[in-house]
Each structure stands twice: as structure tokens, then as C-alpha cells.
Image (cartoon, rainbow, N blue to C red; front, side, top):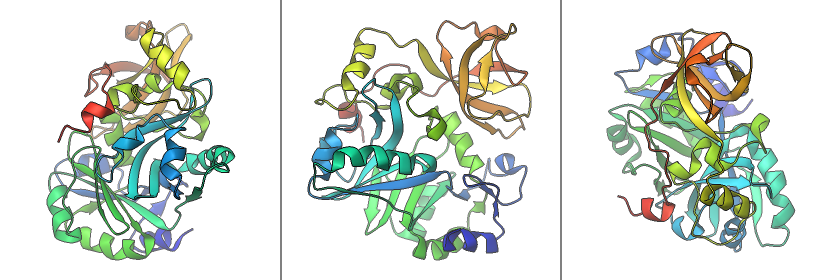
Length: 348
């Protein structure tokens, strides 16, 4: 347990697991519909790549175009095996000219470090988890104003960043404004107490629900080496540059795109019950045949489970269920078509 986690517990937080924190509010998703919410993002972590070769090293490993990662635009990216399957997906941001941070699932920080370290020995680049950082989520209509008032930082646009020393603010998509705050744990307690005067502290399941509503899937350790980036709609979120040079897995990813060989896609759905399925739970038809699996799940404001699932594109959706609950497909907030990060970076 970190000092930051212990401090949260003195403020009423409950550590349900290594990935989940709440404040004992079972109806939290409904409570924060109209208010601004503050939450610890215990399920996310930061991996740092630092050194004179950091940019060149990352250019050969990630689906992002490093020329675009300029301290303003902070794109989504993927790290793949030679077979094009994702080992991790992340948001890539530049902190200084030679230092980059990857925001990703906490459970993939160490596995991705181990994978990248095999190649980093040929570069002047160091890789380390930033366990000294705290990650907070700020969600709601008044969130931009709170950033200005409490941090004296201008809110960035979606998938961009604002930086002040080692304080970084990221803007993630969703039905309401929401921001990730990355800062040293030593400063987190003071900032939390300041923000909590105007925002309601809630658990990070609220943030995970907003990711589902945004059609945004963060893979965890159990899902490594399973999906092509397109299977979680990564090219529709500007997470793949098809205009850059080679990176590990690039040939397979490009071939799947240009030949139309993606047979599974991420969908958003609601279940007709309140049972939140485990990650990896099968999506099956009435005969028991599996057509996909759940990649994230959370309860919505009405007490029903919402999920993201990777599903066979030919599945008959009318007959699908998860853990005995009927599946109803919901609309994604973006089109399933290629969005080049080179173009998205210019949209301000």
C-alpha cells in the first residue's frame, strides 16, 4: 500500500482490490449524473521511457507516429507482437524532449516494461514504472472550470495534454468532460482535498463506465497477445498511423486493414440484468456457441450492466447473452472507419 492509498483511506476510500477503489456508495453512477465527480484511477498506471534515444526507440515499437507526439497531441497507441496482436494499448504523451509517458492498464505496466526492455538495450533509453505518481479522474460539466481554478491549468482538447512541471492533464472523450490528472503522489493529497470541496469523491468504476460509453477499451494482462488493434476499433480512434515506417507487427496490422480481414469488432452493449460479468466472460447464443468475449463491464446509472465486447462480425445479435443476461447492442459514439492521427492532430 502506498502513502497515497493510505491517505485516501483516511478520507473514506475502500480498497476493494488492487484495481478498484470506492467510497461505499453503491448508487454512485446515478449520484454523479448531474454533479462533478472526483475519483482515484487505481486501475491505470504510467510507464516512462527516458533518454536521448527514447523517441527513436518508441518509433520502432509503437503504432503511433512519434513526430506527432509533441507535448500537445497525446495520441492513443498500441504495442504488438510480430503477429500483430496487441501486447498493450496506451496513450502516449511527451513530458520533455527526451521523456515520454505511457498511460495504460496498471496490470500491463510491468509486462510491457519486460517486453520493451529486450529491445531497449540497443538504445540510450531507460524504462521504468512511475509508481511515485498519482492518477486522478475529474468528470463533469464543471471539470474544466475546476482545472483552471485549482490547478491554474487550461483544459486541453480531447486526446491532447497540458503540462506544468510534472503535473499533466489529459482530456479523454465521453458524454461529459473528463480529465486525467497525473501528478506526484506527494502533491496528490492536497489537490484531492481542494478538488473535493467542489466535486463528489467516487470510485473508479464510474470512470470505467465512462470508458464504456466512449467505446474505449483498455486491455489488461489477461488479454495480452489476443487481439489485432482493429478488433478494439483502434484505427477508428486514431490509434494507428498507417503513414509511418515499420514497427513491430506493422505488416500484419496493415495487411488486415487494406485487405479487410478484420473479422471481430468491439461493440458496446447493455445487459438486461445487474450482474456485472467478469472480463473474458463469453458472449454466446442460446445454443451456447461463443461468438465473442467481454473486455470491460460496469453498472450504469439505472443499475444495469453495460459492457464492451469483442464480437464476431457475423454473429446474430438478437440471440446473444452474457452470464444469462440478454445482450442489447448500443450505439458507439464514433464511426467504424479509419481516422488517421496525422489528420486528428490538426483538429483543434
